Image (cartoon, rainbow, N blue to C red; front, side, top):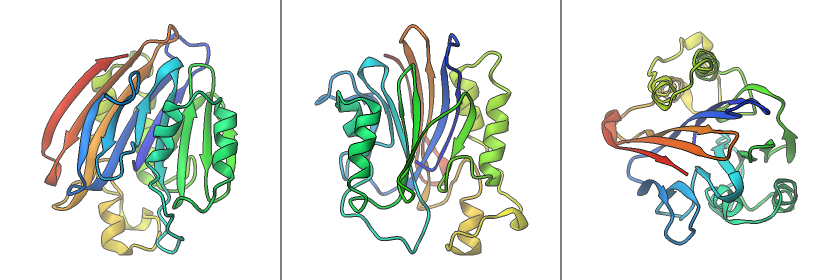
Length: 248
């Protein structure tokens, strides 16, 4: 998962609105958004190579999403980061207890950002800093750096999300995720992947022959506990493969 924007509104009729793009190599096998047969009540896409997920909803209003940290020089963890949100969604641990246990295993995974929560609370965890923070109400965003790092695509996505708050619909959230505008060269971050790579990854929606946005997901959480999930899956060059809407 390479971009997440969300509106966290405790006490609102719709306390959480979220739009997220998962960027990955097209060759990596994945299963579209669905209820997992081996975990009733867990709704997520699934990485069929390592078995985890990048975003999902579970029982008791649980929600989890993850992005990787873009740092070519970082140590490579032995375990797949996708197991982190999946394990939380399967777990009965409190958010705080789960994060505490996760912080005790810093070398298991390559760098990541994690969002965990339910209807009452939402936490962000940055693994390189081993820092957990309860999010304040407002619009927040994650890409492949820290929370709310002002990369052009993240600023663009946060602004687009702010325009949907009066009448949020899954289609509007999915539409903002389809923006393929690349940033000007002078605005690009320098994360060690070269100018061509920075250009490719600077748009909200990424498309190429081998790597790009594989899934765009919208999540609307209602105060009564119901949730609406919508997902579009894509193949090489951004070709639409499937579309799923479900309530859970």
